[in-house]
Image 1 (cartoon, one colour):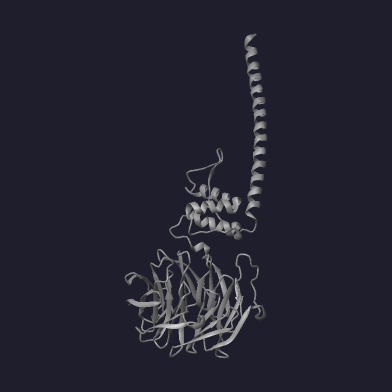
Image 2: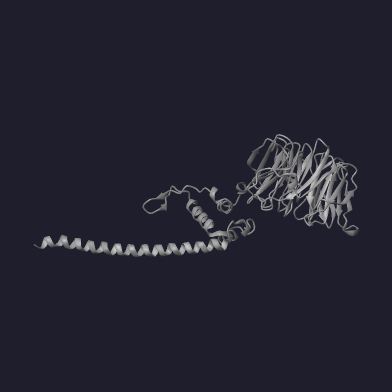
Length: 445
């Protein structure tokens, strides 16, 4: 699914439960803007064309002179943005300016919000990382700490999902990793390894890995606990890596480069799972909360929703992956070929060991509806795959009622067939006895 906004390259995208915010930059005017639209549902939407400007919910044009370099949602639905005007700006959900945060001496290159929503971290071309807290008068944001451990432009900042760590990356190729507690950051490790600017970060959901993307075309995975390098993919792209992002379920990672590609990596093995060859550059890519779609901001003025469910299988069983496919797109499900013995209608030794089981389970999930699926998933993997009834096009109770009625009809038909078969067998036995008597009589003459 793709959405055309209006002329101007898209630089970043942010999602909330109900809305989607996108930043744009127009080379014609030299200004950056923010637009907000309702978050489309790729599962139910039949729309694949252009979203006209008058269909957008809110618009804020020319909010920064130059590019809007960072954007994120606050817990109350407000938006936080930064740009070349040397300030951060807080906007209401309807994009009315609420507060301007001053302090940086130069363009503000990046911004992030802590998971609790209590603190903001911003990085600027002045080499400073500033920590802000909503502790000011009247609920306003106020600066509480300035980190000056770097001497060059800060290009990336990122909080860990548990809010206990903060990573910063800069032009000088270094990554500073801070422990973060009650709004106070303390430098814990300095990570060396990149040979060019550090552009982007993403922590794994369990906080055990930090992924970084760089102008040196590499993606590196670090252990935040001790600062050690776990894995380096030196030629992940053939140009700058603009964006890296873990899926919320932690199974895959998406990277976007200046080489007109977007790539999906296995988060456990670090192997490349798929490459999207594109005619445009993706500057920012994130996942929907269910991990099923990649949402990207692109140079061709479009936001795209790219399905990625089929790439989630890592160390999990094929059965779990199959269940997801059945839940969403039954008509596209393919099964391993089952070779049956015609006489007994049972799988033969040539059949893959799991083929018959997967087919039966697939039919059970497809026909059983939400209740059956949730029971299976709760047993196999209760956390990774929460299935909610809203994903079903029909009422699960109706599906179950129809299934029970169908089963009752089948049982009735089976009973009638058994009665008919019994009658046929009885007739056959009588015929066999008569034939035996006919064969015996001639012998007695």
